[in-house]
Amino acid sequence: MKTLSIFGATGSVGESAFDLLMRAGGPDAYRTIALTGGRNVARLAEMARALRAEVAVIADESLLGGLRDALAGSGTRAAAGEVAIDEAARMPSDWSLSAIVGTAGLMPGLRVVERGGTLALANKESLVAAGPLLMGKARASGSAILPVDSEHSAVFQCLGCGKLDGVERVTITASGGAFRDWPLERLASATVAEASCHPNWSMGQRITIDSASMFNKALEVIEAHEFFGLSSDRIRVLVHPESIVHAMVTYCDGATLAHMGPPDMRHAIGHALHWPDRAALPVAALDLAALGQLTFRAPDEVRWPALRLAREVIAQGGAAGAVLNAAKEQALDDFMAGRIGFADMAPAVEHALDIAAGRPHFGDSPGDLDAVLAWDRAARRDAGDWAARRG
Image 1 (cartoon, rainbow, N blue to C red):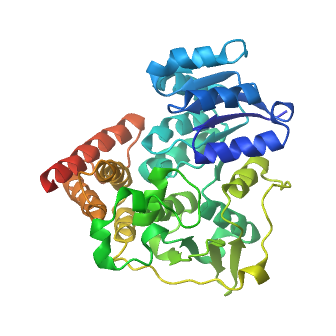
Image 2 (cartoon, rainbow, N blue to C red; image 1 turned 180 degrees about the vertical axis):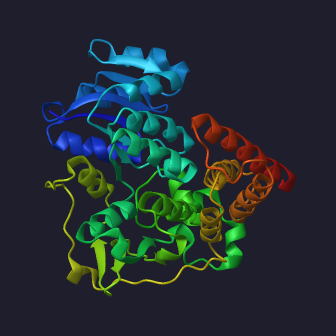
């Protein structure tokens, strides 16, 4: 019986994984080692009971008492805090899903690959902030890292039909988010509520806003660079409002393979869960006749400056990814708190990158988790200072 752990079980990706596991038989099909969540004690406990998890960890230490009460008599051990998440990630399991949002997801992913486990990676920030570190540790331990972002899973699947050295370019698609058809002059006055309504995908609030700003896609461009070893000129982004084609791989012989499917994260999760095999999933098959048409257009980098910043970060290398990721998170916090406007997020990130570029060792890839977190803290401070002056 395959053993598994889910880090970020109560988020949107974790919920989709839980749905797949329960449909497959839950504890009769898989042995769950660890589940972690942020603050949703009731849901974490419900999931842990259903899957008979060995341990359930809540990130907020003040909620440990409530989690213990909710798990009383279940046989699942309750724990809380960063140290407990670290310990859970070190527990042996065959397969682990990293679905914690933000830099917080880096540590458990590193622990999984250090012990040689298979890491199903939905936390794109891990590769953006520490791609060489994570991939290097995976190579050293023999760990497999499987992409769970829908776009990178699509590329991964298309690459099964040819070798990487025969690839001319990779295209990842973007829905365009909530504001893809807004007049540019309206973006400065966009509200948090308006940015939180995705036209196609059901996701958490932060990633939905990142979709509207295209910072989510910017991170995915960097992720594709780190995961597949592609230069930025071989990574293309197209706006595809229908969200049916998730990615395309164009080979040197002119052939382009496209991965198509409904906007349902259970496909990418299920592919990683069953890889290298395929298994039936509760995902609807496409009816292309009913769809009628698929549309594509090039992204406007005036509307979405995050894409330009992503390519600059790839060119800079070193600590630039860690800085962009942390500054983006801080800028998003400031937007959600009303301290800056929607259109201010990219300038805040660019300011943090400019400041960081003048610091010693900016051109060196962070060699360990502490180094990544040091750049992370500095970038958050710099982006926050910009927002404070703006306000």
